[in-house]
Image (cartoon, rainbow, N blue to C red; front, top):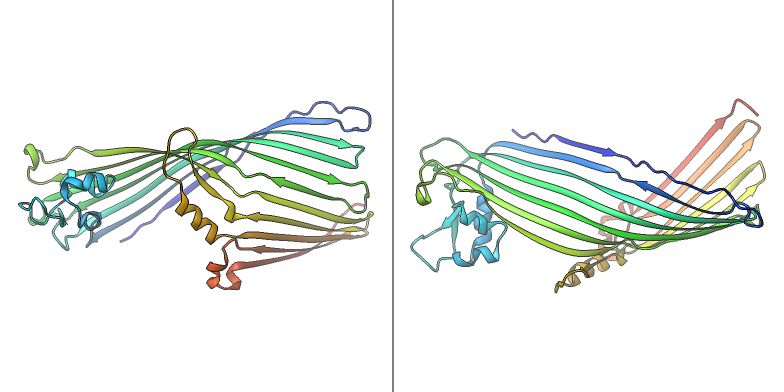
Length: 365
């Protein structure tokens, strides 16, 4: 029997801003500045349960440890097989061979266990933006924003097993748990303009910088076991053995360029076109600049560079009015960010075209 209930929850942002009174003169709308802030929260839970399973996570730990001396397990596999060995979850095939490198799970081969696997996660990302804008004679508009990002996310993965009660099985149960806590902060910048000196043909452009983020990971792994008969020092249960590690790194997201233009036919209707470009292959992982870190993320960055590409997005729409009736039509082209080396999925999976249309009637002039 398998049960997989999943729950998720999300709480949106609550922005606020303050804009001073407009100035007079050619900058008739004045120079504006303000602040917006938001903190969306997310939480989720997933669980899978099964009875009478013929394999154990300890079998995987024993396979990982294959070829490694017992004294080297903790250094070679500190978060998995090394911990399992410390709590007698896996044991040498030949306990008398000090140079043995083969291991077996504490459960007999084919023993059936009940398993429960749970993942709990929760976190939040806050974004506080400071912005400045100017309006020159209601014809030319400038804008600049600086965003400060805060991020935290926690994930706990728990795997537990309970054995079927038979005389041939000594182990009663075991539990393996991973905890990952990620926190950090970052910054991004955006700038743009709109030119409406020719009122019938307004156009504009904007540039969104990469999001530069400094992240810190705290990782903990622990294993515990219970046995029917005493093991080391007469104990039937081993205390939870755990290991904690920390890792710091930086993430740089891709930059984005946005451009738009429109034709406005007075009160009759309009055409508009939007274009956006983002090169997802420019995303990068980098070592932390706060602590000494010899790892350079070269393999990860090469994978990103070879797997992703620049993406062009085009959106177009029109709306026309006839009396109290409005007619709308829209079209958009989105390209998948995967590179040429990943195009075997087919054109239908790489390109998504969306079309929309509508008719509306107002009940007043």
